[in-house]
Length: 217
Length: 219
Image (tube, rainbow over all chains, first blue to last red; front, side, top):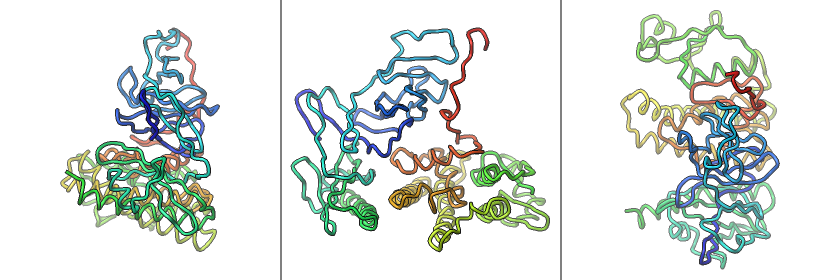
């Protein structure tokens, strides 16, 4: 995670898990966000709560360039302003109806959300190929311990695997929950990539055991 | 073909969904599962001594296992849903058909405990449910690396229909689906199929239809 005085970037999802025209829930320390991609490919992150009735917007749907609530169809733009209230077709929604939004950056197949107002851009991950994201019921220390404890300068935990390296980009969800983005370096053929999927399952089991023994309250 | 059905049962929905997707017309016989426990009454026990639904009746064939019903519908109306293009594909179909029983026991058990207050160790059922979801998620990630969007092939098979309902309804049993991106995409792909039908708690993809427009004063 890249930090400066005003804010930081946290990796919330892999680009491949958010095709155009879809929405997914993601976690940041302050709670859940609705991360979505418009039909034309722009990403946005909104508070995961419709101001109308409190329904999670991540249960909603994307049509065109707007995110709509599943409950009564209120639609929001990327900037968070309400575009449309279907039950009042003649009404132009007032500016005061809006959802809080977060800055989003996407690079090298990873989607980052701003916590606060970071000045720089998220760290580059050139040369790493995203494989999958998974959630572990373990803290970052337990995952690093399970992986053998080798951490790169960018804060990525590295595990040697055959001819290449499995890189774990970690995002803390809460005290005992971590989102792991698995990125591969030098592992390209299909069999080795499938083996890497299986080894991340084993690594999660190991990390959760360590967490239970050493960190859980 | 007569289906003894209950609208809120994910296992019954599997059969209604499969029939809809393969354009088979079912004669639906609603069963008062809750609160009437009609499936435990003499008439239905005579058909199915196990006292479970769904039950599918076609002439003298009586099926009481939902996976067998899926195979029957597919074999009769749409054999491509059987997933028999290769030995691996056929084996994967059987693997996930059997696995679907674990989803019913864990996620389905948690749902019955939470929704109908059936006795059960909710913590243990949820833990088993999470393990099953993780296995399914890993299976789908592996399939995507093979260039396949569904559990056994690059097209849906009976295995997908057998697993889909209890997975999507996991939150009814207090098991969140947020942590599973591959399951989310798989669920989207299934809900986007032609002739897809809903059940309470499993909705269609609204975005596939154009935005409805109502003139002011019309509603």
